[in-house]
Image (cartoon, rainbow, N blue to C red; front, side, top):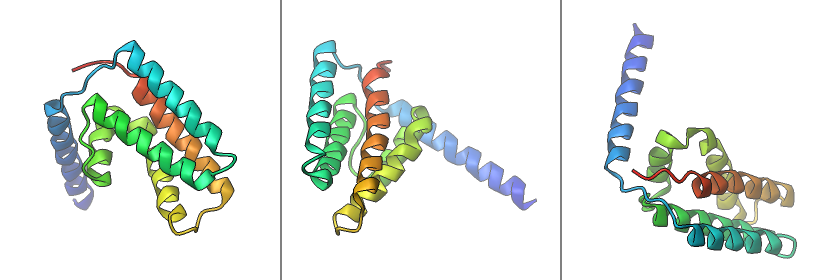
Length: 136
């Protein structure tokens, strides 16, 4: 019985997320903007060797700007997770892992290897957002 209630709550939550997502004005980016974002990502990656913590923060910022330009609300991390979960569920774990490292790196509590991993995670979400150009 408890499992049934949990399943029903999960379905209600999914429907609510889908309805919210349907209200978003997700836009396709012109090829020129996609190219500019790809170049910006290359710059962020190049900075990693000399400034890994800054690069992770830059990657987070670049993903946020891309989300914003595509039409996703960027007000808060939890809201971004909820909105991304509808169509980008397969890269959501990448975003969570990268964000966790970014938060810890702000206090100097992330190793260089963790920062490198965060860049890999951000890149997975970034590439999906950049190449998934189905407009609504």
